Every structure is written in C-alpha cells, then in structure tokens.
Length: 105
Image (cartoon, rainbow, N blue to C red; front, side):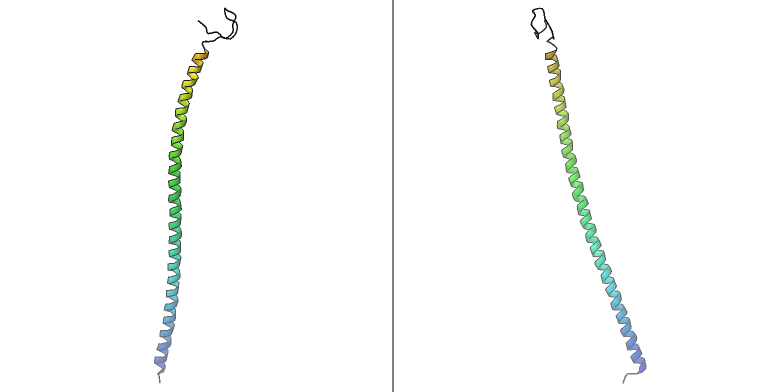
C-alpha cells in the first residue's frame, strides 16, 4: 500500500503534468498564430511586390507614350509651319487679275 506521502506526491506530479500539458497547448496555439500571421505577412509582401512591379511597368509605358506624344507634337508643329507658309502665299479678296486665291508675286 502506498503511503500518504507517496499518494500526495503522485497527485502533485499529476497536477504538474496537467499544467505542463496546458502550457504546451498554449505554446502550440501561439505557434499556430505566429505561423498564420507570418503567412499573411508573406502574402501581403507578395501583393505589395506585385503592385510595385505593375506600377513600374505602367510608369515605363507612360514614359513611352509621353515620348511619342512629344514627337507627334513636334511633327504637328512642323506641319503647321509648312501649312502657314503655304497659306501665307495667298490673299483673300480681289487680285490684280480679279481672280480670288492667286498666289501673291
């Protein structure tokens, strides 16, 4: 038969093991929460990275369009100057011959 002291020691050991088991369970829960948070953070980081890459691509596209727009504007200015030069050769109204729109000489 076990002595009272042995019985008490076994009971205390049992309670300690139960508390240790509870602590292990809480640590496991914390580990799971940390793992889930780390995965969420990694997913968010991937999304931010994807968004930055998209932004860089769009920026390069916009730069190309801006360059094309500038080149087109320069071409339009050249055409406008040519048209103005051509139009400036003509007068509106009667000329010496009575015909409208003859080139001035």
